[in-house]
Length: 80
Image (cartoon, rainbow, N blue to C red; front, side, top):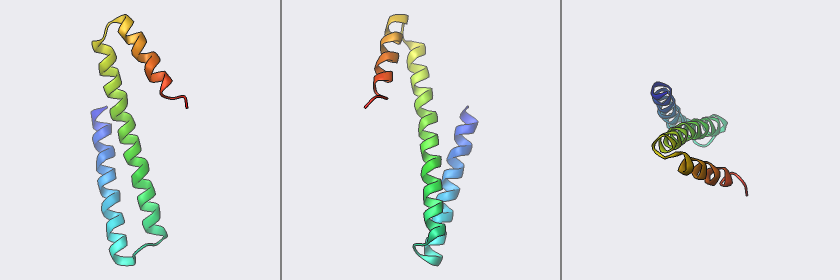
């Protein structure tokens, strides 16, 4: 899991560097927009992975009742 997270962060960095280079060469253009959007998606994926691991660790440390309450509270955050 940690290797996948690290690989994803490396792709975020590489994409961002490509985007900056494209910006300096061409300014705002479709290539730049595409790379920024791709970087955003990769960042979101990394955030989701980190969040999942944090929640997993929290549940592992909590007792059964607290775990159920935490799961319920987290589930509620998904509803508007």
